[in-house]
Image (cartoon, rainbow, N blue to C red; front, top):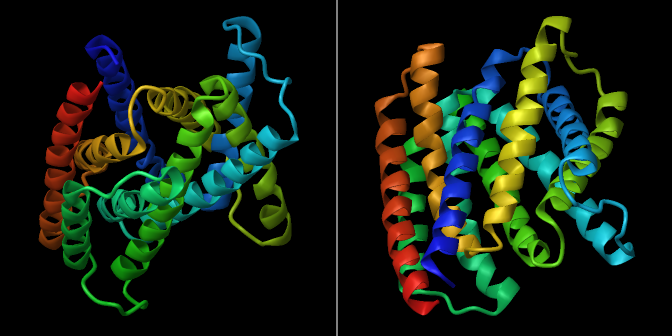
Amino acid sequence: MKPSILNKGIAQIHIAVFLFGFAGLFGKFLSCSPLYIVLGRTSFASIALFIFSRFFSKTVLFAFGKKEISFFIFQGILLAVHWWSFFLSIQISSVAVGLVTFSTFPLFVTFLEPLFFKEKLKTIDIFIAGAVFVGILLVIPNFDFSNNITKGGFFGIISGFTFALLSLVNRRNARISDSIAVAFYQNLFAAIFLVLPISTLKVEPPQLSDLPNLIFLGVVCTALAHTLFIKSLTFIRAQTAAVIAGLEPVYGIILAFFMLNEIPQARTLVGGLIIIGTTILAGRLSREKEGKRN
């Protein structure tokens, strides 16, 4: 792989990760249930992606067989659960806790990727996993679920696990489907999946004033960011994408400080620094190895 192509993938994922970090703030901007936040996010994202594919790209959305559609449905369910647990974590605790605990997903990718793609587990990957685990122990003060930080951290880890699965399925599917089509169907089926729990549970609906935020969240922080993230996986490994995405808490925490005046606890910062610092270092090493290999 040429360095220019590899750099293109790196640039795409960095932009996507910044937008993902910004998206976390909407867990505080919006007062409605996380189920509605994700429904609005995925609905507006799928509409935006449909319009883009119809008028501005050569993407063909309706030429897939049952096998591909089954993949998309599974991806949509994973996406819905990932975002629901992500926003729930932030609403219960804080932007910092939600983002940092979500960043455990490299830990899951590290051990799942060799199983998915029959690749060898590297020493650096084990180092990442160990550092992430230590960081999580610092972020979560105890295992008492009456503590909002612990509860928020738990749902953040669920968000990280489902995102790890989604990244690996995306990597498998990215090379056989257009990234716009993958993003469209993931968001579409995520929205469809959420209709049942919303229709059966009594949850806080959004207000009319929430509409502009939901549109921005869906179109910019989802349709654009999601497409860039999936597209980057055609150039780089899921493990590389995972460690670069460790920057998401950095972007999110900085934005939360300036826009929400939210100051993380010392334990959260220390744990986050361990996780983020390790993943950035590992990402750099992984990138160098990929460049030499390709």
